[in-house]
Length: 109
Image 1: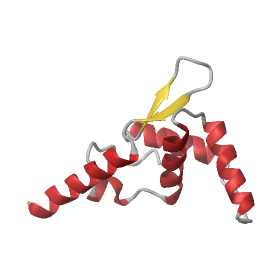
Image 2 (image 1 turned 180 degrees about the horizontal axis):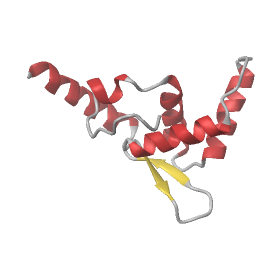
Image 3 (image 1 turned 30 degrees about the vertical axis):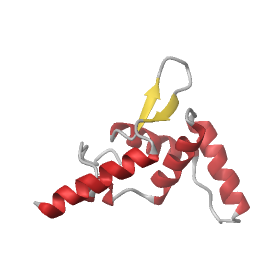
Image 4 (image 1 turned 180 degrees about the vertical axis):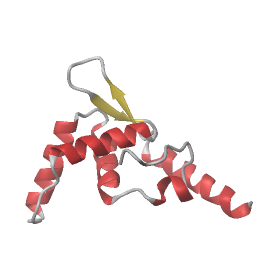
C-alpha cells in the first residue's frame, strides 16, 4: 500500500481501486463517528465470526488500511492521545456526490 500514488482526485481513478475492506471500514467509521483501529478490528472480527468466514483480517491490515485511507483523504486522525482516534472527512452522501461529479466531469470532457 505504501507504493500507491496519492491523489486528490475522487472518482474513476481515485475510487476505482477502493477495496472491500476499505469500503467496510468507511461504513464502520460513518456509523460510529469516532473510532480507534482496535475498535474497528473488533467489529470486523465479530462480523467475520458471525459469517463463519475462514481466516480473519489481522489487526495490522486494519491499521495499515486506515492509515492509507487517511493518506488518501478519506479519514482524519486525531493524534492528541496515545491511541489515535479516526473520523471521516466526508459523510457517505457528500462522498457519493463528489464521486458522481468527478465521474461526470471525466465523461463530459
